[in-house]
Image (cartoon, rainbow, N blue to C red; front, side, top):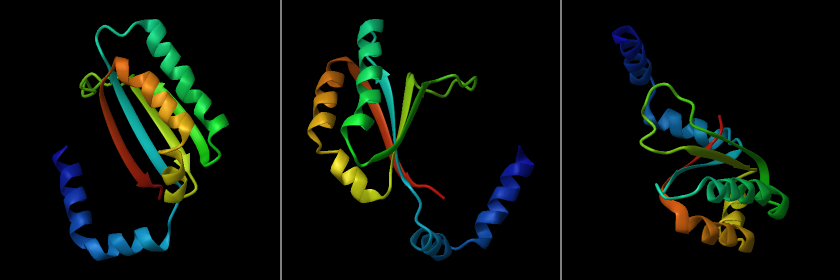
Length: 128
């Protein structure tokens, strides 16, 4: 483990923040929207299944979505902090996400989700 950390530290030492930023600007990839859910303890299995299905229906309703995948946590590392579901929604670029977030079908989905949602974690990134 120490060897891996040393190699990572040395690699990062040779990379400047400007070179990382330049790489990001010069080679934009697909825009990824990663969403993880932790449901309330009293959320029923049927309610969670309804959310899974409603989220899966969004790509057929929102044109800016170019890819969609999801799954439940299967990590043996025990770091999920209660988050059970992860969804990755892909867009051609950030404009795709900007069209998705205020879309009426996304808003309807969020209204359905909120009553059983305990926590959400969201991170967006540009694929390399």
